[in-house]
Amino acid sequence: MTASLWHRTSAANPPRGLDRNTDRSMAKLTDYASYADAQRFANSTALWELFDGNSEQLNIAHECISRHADGSGRTAVRIAHADGADEILSFDKIGADSARFAHWLVANGIQPGDRIAFMLDPSLPFYVSLFGAMMMGAISVPLFTLFGLDGLRLRVDDCKPRLLITNAEKAEIARQIEGVRVVVADADLLEDIARLPGRYQSSSRANDLAVFQYTSGTTRELPAAVKHTHRSIVTLMFAALYGTGIRPGDEYFCPSSPAWGHGLWHGTLAPLALGVTTGTFSGRFDAIRLMKALQDYKITNMSAAATHYRMMKNSGKASEFRFYFKKLSYTGEPIDPATLQFIEDTFGVPACSMYGTTEIGVVLVNYPGAGDYVVKPGSLGKPIPGLKLQVQKPDGTPAEPGVVGELMLWKRNGWETTKDLAKTDEDGYLYHCGRADDVIISAGWTMSAVEIENTLLKHPDVREAAIIGVPDATRGQVAKAFIVSERAASDDFADELKKFTRERLSQHEFPRHIAFVGELPKTPAGKVHRKILREREAAAVGS
Figure 1 (cartoon, rainbow, N blue to C red):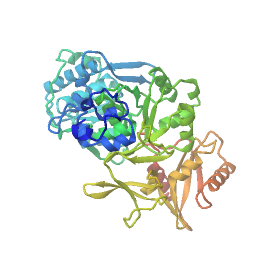
Figure 2: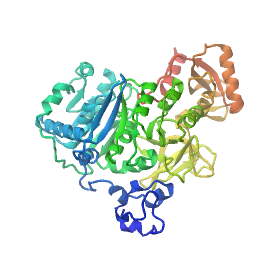
Figure 3: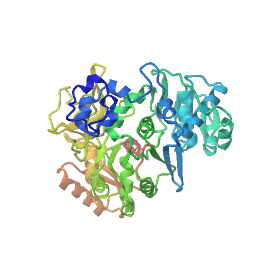
C-alpha cells in the first residue's frame, strides 16, 4: 500500500485483518475484507501492487504461474474429474511444462502474436497450452470441448490459429477443417517437450494481446471474440477481490468450464495470480461428483454458475456431504428464490451475485466475506469500486427506485448499454429484470420473463422453466411457458400453474400458454437459451 493511502488510516485503528504491529507500508488490497475499506483503498495504484509487472512490461503466465513456482511444490490446481479421479497440479509442474511448451512453440516457428487454439478439458495439457502460449507471446484461444464441426469451424475461421491442440477424439473432427495444423495433446507431446528447458523468459508488453475469448452462442451465428491484453489480469482483479471475495488462504473452487469467461478469468487466472489454489471440474458435469470434491478438498470459497447450485439442489443429495464454505458467489443468470433458500439452508452462507458480461467484465458485486455488507437475496449488488451504473428510462433519465429500466454503464465519457433491464431499491442495490429482448408487452402491460420464471420455479413440481413472448391477435404478445417436470403433462397441471402464477404476481402476469418439454435448450455455458425457443416457436407458427 502506498504512503498516500496510508495517511487516512490511524495507527489506533488498523485495517481489519492487520495486526497493530504489521508494517503498514507492506499492506495490500488482499489484506482488507470490508466493504468500507474497498471503497476507501481500492484504486489502480493499489491494484498494480499485487503484481510483478508494470504498465509497460507484463505477462499473464508469469503473474499466474512462473512467479509462484518456487520449488515448494505448492498446489496450483485441483481437478475433479467426472470419473472420480482427482488430479493435483503444482505451480512448479505447470510452470516447468509451460516453459518447455513455450520453447517447443518457438522451435515450431510460432511467433509472438500468433494464435494458439486449444480444445481441451481441464488437465495438465490444458494449463500447459494456456500458459505456455502466453509465456512466449502467442495468443491463447480456449475453445469449448463440446463444439461440433460447425461450431469449431466458425471459430477457427475467425481467429485463424497456427495450431489447434486437442485430444485424440476431437482431432478427428478438427482435421476436417482446412488450413490449421492439429496437434494431439497426449503423452507423446509431453515426452517431446520434456527435453526442453523448464524456464522461459517472457518479454511481452502489457498492451500485447494475450487471450481471445469467445462468448457462448449458437453455431449458426458466431459470437464475437473478445480480445484481451496481458493488462486484463490487472483490471480483472477488482472483480475477483469483490465479486468472488478471493483472498490468500482460501481453498477455492469454480466448476465453470475455463473455455468461457467465468471459468477462465474468475476460476483460473484470478486465483492463480494471487497464488491461491483453485479447483475445477473436468468432464460431463455431475452435481454429486462436485459435492464430493467440495467436501474432500475442504473448499471454503466457491464461485459457480446459477445452474450448478440448482443442480445440487435438484440432486436431493446435498445432506449427505459436509461443507466448509465461508464465501459463495454465482454468475451467469439470476438464481430463483427456491435455490437461494436451498443455499442458505444447506451451506449457511449467502450466495453473492456477480453480474457482468464477457464484453464489459464484471461490474456489479456483493462483496463476499465483507462483514459490513448486507447481502440482499436476489440482488445483483452494488458497483465494484470506481464504476458508475444507472438504471435509465427510455428518455435517458434516471429511473426511480422500483422502476424497471435499461441498465447503463458509464464508460469512455458516455453511457453504454448493458442490454439488460434492472431496477434499484431505496438502498441503491440493483436487481436484474431480464435481457432487454426478454420483456413481454401484453395489452399494454410490461412483464418480465425472469420474474414469471422465478415464480413458476417455486411450484414443487416444476424442475425448470423458461418464458418467451409469443404473438397474440388480441394482446399483441402473451407469455408462453416451457416446463420441465417429472409430473405427467395435463391440462389440469397447466391450469394449476397458471393459477399458481396469477396468485403470486398479478392477474395479467401469467403464462397463457404452457408447453411441457423434456429439456430446455441451453447455451454451452449452461444458461437457458430463450433465443432458440423463440426461433422454434416462429418456425412452428410459420409452418
